[in-house]
Image (tube, rainbow, N blue to C red; front, top):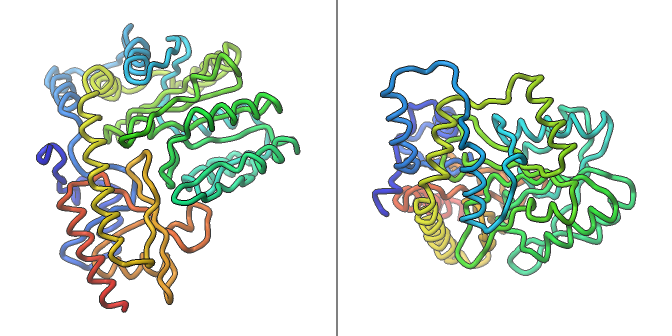
Length: 387
């Protein structure tokens, strides 16, 4: 497993994460833990499938193939014991593209759309670029994890807000919403006839002791549910541009398919199709190995930061490879600490951009153990100079 998750040199590969770090840093050696993608090779089955397809040499017009939907159905059934119909699957270029199209189709200009902060910071501009308004239902902290504020959510539903965006598993706080929480959410949405859009891009990155249940599982109880998922985060293939919408409601399904046909975006690109099929057919063991690797990295950073007593608090990680950390330094805010770390060649994400006060940072740990250790050593050096 050590060689399997060895950090690659991505500095001259058009990687957004590493390019941004290079632009902001004069250090000879730098380590970035900001943008949510991984710094090691994708699964061997994907590399092999892509190499074989490229070696063929022809890249003309291509369809997704007759087995495309079945492969996705089998992944959900075999991995999560969730049954979805093949007709429910709609291929799309990306999760954010799907979110934007869904908002445009099923809400009106000037409508209010609920999100749960702190949350993925791009939700807000996607909503606002569609000329809708963001309404926040902030998560609540209970001990070392975040929980949904159902009372506050019901108040918003009562007040007529009819669209809700769920992040599941949650970026950045690392929650995997459990069956009880999801059932309560669906029951509330059904009571007030609220459309739920569930972003499940991190669904396969689950830590030991936790289980993922897609919201699509509740479609028989309530048919106003749209799930957007993708293999891109877990297999680090976001640059290939592929995702899928899952919706069992026939009316909603037909409307979305019609829109993608109108936009001429209903067929993914050839290499993306190849990667998805390889991932979902042969990548299961690799995902399990990666999840263990991420959990080991999480344990490492948690133990390391505990040496600083109350200066940092690492929240419990249930899913994603994103660690949410509270900064309790007496004389410096979290954003200022992030800027200080840049001087030592370490890059993190400021927590305030996720919709909370300036006390938090987010750290992507989908990297090698060595890269994480080097980053933490520089973190230590920064702390020595601050104090």
